[in-house]
Amino acid sequence: MFDKILIANRGEIALRVVRAAREMGIATVAVHSTADADAMHVRMADESVCIGPPSSTDSYLSVPAIIAACEITGAEAIHPGYGFLSENANFVQIVEDHGIKFIGPTAEHINLMGDKITAKETMKNLGVPCVPGSDGGVPTLAEAHRVSDEMGFPVIVKATAGGGGRGMKLARTKTDLDLAFQSARSESKAAFGNDEVYIEKYLTLPRHIEIQVMADSHGNVVYLNERECSLQRRHQKVIEEAPSPFLDEKTRKKMGEQAVALARAVDYESAGTVEFIVDPQRNFYFLEMNTRLQVEHPVTEMTTGVDLVELMIRVAAGEKLPIAQKDVGINGWAIESRVYAEDPFRNFLPSTGRLVRYQPPLEDAHVRVDTGVFPGYEITPFYDSMISKLICYGETRGEAVLRMRRALEEYRLMGVKTNIPFHQHMMDSHRFLTGNFHT
Ligand code: ADP
Image (tube, helix red, strand yellow):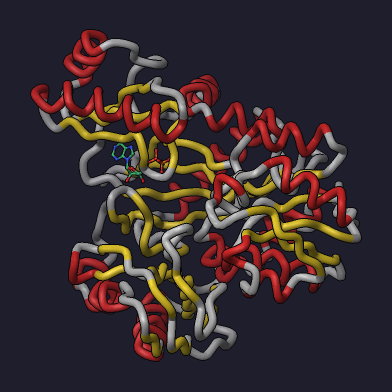
């Protein structure tokens, strides 16, 4: 096992990793920008290194600064959290080349799955159904029209290198296609430095359901059931839950086994998420694989009793998975609400400023608050505007909803606007309560 690891991230996820490491007796190194000098993850870690100015490009995304921080402190491994460099194959290669262990998959896996076309190709070869679409990149508008006419509208134009909902444009009809194609390309070029796009049939009434997998370096792979992530805004998740109110045992098993087959086929290592689109008849189609820990991982932890970060660290250190598929059950229900500093009454306009008052709901065995903020914390435009993730557990879905309502009510916040009223509205919504919703 490692003696010391570095966490190349900030906020709640950096803290999450610090806590897991501490429980395992591993020393931690935090890295931070000048803006985060007194951030919670810095205070809680054993050591910290300033890696640059506020802008993430010059700090949390600075590969030389992070490698240097590792070498100065003697950290043996890096946990990347999510976002930032977590799915940057180039970074992982450099980490590996420096003899530092990356707590996650290899650079090769990230490359393979990060290219969405290659990932779909791999799935297709395994006989897993994929969302119907172009075979590979679509280089010209003429080709885009040919492919879309053949498939039938609506279609969705997506960046090959895409992520976070960027470089993704819907064309409901043929007349929308020119604009969708051009804007997906230019957005992708700006965000990912690559303007290759591909086209998929846009499935109507889709649900986004994903399977958590975990693999060690000895060929053992398990799936830790699904997360329902259909509640999205602009193709970004806002509320997630486990299990899904829509899946039956048979579909769950089929999806789980296919996700494991993909992980095995590429010799995957560490935590990964296989995302599927599920139609109203419960037909499912592979969407993409995320090669990192997901924001919404706590709902899986609460319902399976597995600590995903601990497992990631263990398998990175070469240990065998301590659980087999038969040990994985579903116990109860968990829902996560992502609380953001944004104004739901003004179309979710981001809200920055100082949290002059911050009192989260009381945490207990059934309520978990993952956060990096504290009273006096400044929400800046430099980073993600997430205040906290509120995760509530119940024996049943109904109980989890009631607990979520109660916990949302307990927040006392002043200084910024939050989307808590939106979450409260959702917890009262008939559609949400019946489980009858789609993306
Ligand atoms: P990103 O990696 O940018 O998050 P994804 O490919 O994971 O993009 O898609 C994000 C979301 O967009 C999905 O959860 C779903 O809501 C929607 N989506 C993507 N592709 C399709 C499709 N072919 N049909 C319907 N919805 C889609």
